[in-house]
Amino acid sequence: MLYLIGLGLADETDVTVKGLELIKKAERVYLEAYTSILLVDTKRLEAYYDRPIIVADREMVESSSDEILAEADTSDIAFLVVGDPFGATTHTDLVLRARALKIPVQSIHNASIMSAVGATGLQLYNFGQTVSMVFFTDTWKPASFYDRLKENHQIGLHSLILLDIKVKEQSLANLARGRKVYEPPRYMTVAQCASQMLETEEGKGEGICGAQALAVGVARLGATDQKMVAGTLKQLSEIDLGPPLHSLVLLGGRTHYLERDYIREFAIDVAIFDTVWREFYAGES
Amino acid sequence: MLYLIGLGLADETDVTVKGLELIKKAERVYLEAYTSILLVDTKRLEAYYDRPIIVADREMVESSSDEILAEADTSDIAFLVVGDPFGATTHTDLVLRARALKIPVQSIHNASIMSAVGATGLQLYNFGQTVSMVFFTDTWKPASFYDRLKENHQIGLHSLILLDIKVKEQSLANLARGRKVYEPPRYMTVAQCASQMLETEEGKGEGICGAQALAVGVARLGATDQKMVAGTLKQLSEIDLGPPLHSLVLLGGRTHYLERDYIREFAIDVAIFDTVWREFYAGES
Image (cartoon, rainbow over all chains, first blue to last red; front, top):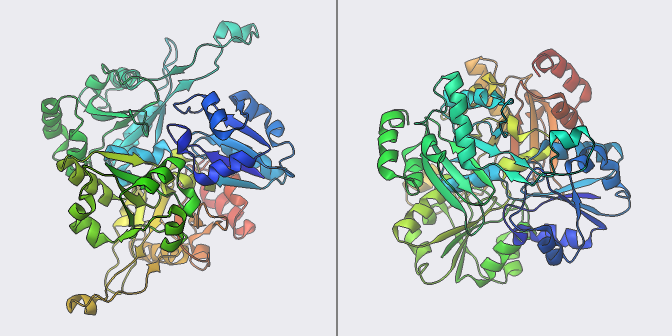
């Protein structure tokens, strides 16, 4: 059996009791470590599970899935995923491969940012499609996220934006020369995301994510030191929310006054929040 | 401290290790039992936690929240919620009330249908807003869900539809006479939901959820006997997926062929699925 086991959001105790029991008795334990991270390191997980962990990078999961699935027809393999196992596309591929090999699969679900974001006080029913933001470079600033935000905006819905992480990436120079030298990991911050949104808005000019748009920045959701701030994208582009992981929610026009009351409590500047709310949001909700 | 603790989707072992430890040491343990249910009964939870549980109905949570919050400033109160604590609006109210009383609040997240629905193989990025379906009566058939589905449809997104549950409801006659006699619990099935969608489509005629629309029916997600079927709404309106809870996903036009491959595996009738796909979906993805 292949067990896809969600680890939740923050630390080693966020695993479910069911998940933990399966990890402890699995033949091999893999940890997917490139679409998201826990806020504790692998050593701590190994000590907690009392089991060695094989860290699976993108290359292994996408090109060597048969290695992961080896003997899964006769023994139990645990494939650990931060959040819920089905947050990222790539695990669907693994399941399809297992199916082709006639290996049974079971999923142990867990908290995902996609539902835990309700902790901001913004109603999950009021979210449109989730959007990804990648790191811009000097020559590559993909703006497709803008079209998704616009679709959500037009029907008044919030947009959850998931921020890029770069783990075990090679520089172009090292990639070209085939050198397996990896860059230090990078995690996009709320400030970087807000800046990229402002930059894109400047080019597009359709009023989807300008300086006055209200948003909520979230850091380390589910951890004891989680942080949430509400403010304009201009304000968020200048804020430091500390260590990763960060996410951002762009407010929709349908925002209910109870949602407003909830996020107003962590406004960066209540006066600015109230002014912007009155001017751009109050009429719509 | 008020702890809002998600219980996950299926049974007592879906609680997180962190959540379980907090339940075991809490002064009082409440279980919210009207927006969703676990697939095991309260007695089993009490035995597993080795703690008595106070079942909190809608009336208690909405009208007597101060009772729940009593002494939460000096001791720990656990408020258990099936799924993730922030799936339902009503818990935001409880947090706002706690804030007003200066009681600190911590959330222990867990799996929610809103992200676990990724187990269907449909990508979470391709979902629009989540929609609720209530039980129709002879005189009350609210069609507002149709407008939400239409908004998602227009941008090609999937729609997760959460199905009504009726727990501890009074009949109109008993309500009028103030008799605290409750009807047996009712849980909407995928077949009922599909029928109501077809009925509404008949009245509206905008081609959002007609007989040929493809959808996925999901039952008991996260349990060992979970079931998923893919088919037209007409087919789903005639299917029996067994005990609760059920959910339904209406397919969006942007459905990727990898998503199709995944759900085709559990098509009610592969020939019908393929025909409908070719005719109505293939061009769009």
